[in-house]
Length: 288
Length: 288
Image (tube, rainbow over all chains, first blue to last red; front, side, top):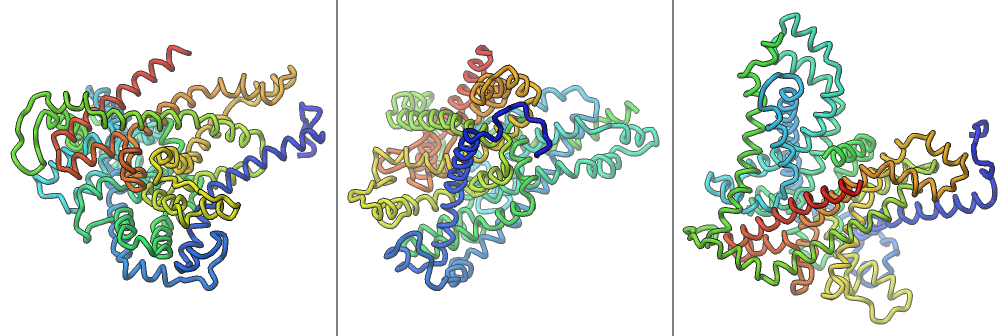
């Protein structure tokens, strides 16, 4: 920093230092507001009710009650919801990525007439509010016996994530050089081989970004499961946690523990892939 | 070469699966919502055609307009809070050390499900033992607010976790736009004697106006569709103090089994959110 030429002459003046101090103060306050509720939640999850109700909210638990987690996981049935969430999320993400890649490949690499209309259909679908589709979706799934069936959830997740996924992929596909693909066509490669062996591997970076975004959406989804699933057997963690809390209203420690369990997987992924996730969130919003 | 890339069978194979899903699970339900709105129907028994009765009822339904007003209020708050996000982003983008870490902290709440956020904030707002009132009591306050239980305060209280959830999201997007502003322009202005506020207001903000427009639309449309958090935190209560369009629709359909009337509300939601998007787009473009 020292050798750099600065156009401002008052770089190290006391005034500027005070200014910087104020700026940092603002940023730190915002950071505390964003983080402290989670710290409080974690403390809560290790407390007994006496500690929650009788003492300062800032007091640490005397001896951390890890039992809260064990009780929630086994007795509360959170483990069961958790695994449902895992496999619905994984299957729906894979389906979305492969279907969206097919469409994007056809839209950017192949020659056909209805491209414009098909692209517009996906774009407009992105803007349609989910709740306006809910009653007919319920009725359709009911008619084909998919209510209380995980297929309804996986189909809904896949479909409603397709538009945003296609939009993110489109940008990447358009910027990708086509020489290798064109050379492969000259060599007589089939389209399927080009798609699976050349294009798809080249899009790995954007696929991992969209996979993470899809994963977060699916893991946190609430209204589809709450509407299409009533049997405990098929509920996901978001809905399961909500019901669990409805039943154990008074045990704050257990509630804290279930909430921590429900957010932990995404937070762990974030710890390792924060740049990818931020990149995906930015891409997913502005492209739309 | 052209032949390979315009093979109709391959195109159909690549495009149709995704297209069918979007048509059958998004577009057909949208049309059906409007159609069901013409019916008297409990979701199980026979539908009875009643013409525009549901829509007439909707236009005179005070609760529907009250819910819409609440959704509009949330949209207004969300747009106003963009100013705050813009200020924080400007601070972050002013060559602050550790900007990346702040950014990563701010986004964390966005990774949680709305359900987990709702349950966490129900506890934070708890009138007896919640974080906020515990602190207020410690500070010597006697009549601490009831927050979510107070009809005059609940909607404003609910907006706090909404800001908490989305602040980081908006900040990283504005920040990403700001750091792409060409450095030469800023240096040139500085040499001309512009101060930091002038540079921010006259150069940086106009240059990222495209992104800001997208965010205004996102904030408005997102607010109009708002559901999960409110449904879990208050269920629209106390009374109807926090009822929004989507929660009102959900109650009518899946609470009272008025599928016909619920569909009319769902159709209203569609018209309102698509219409608003269109109007805002028009307004923002002519201002340019």
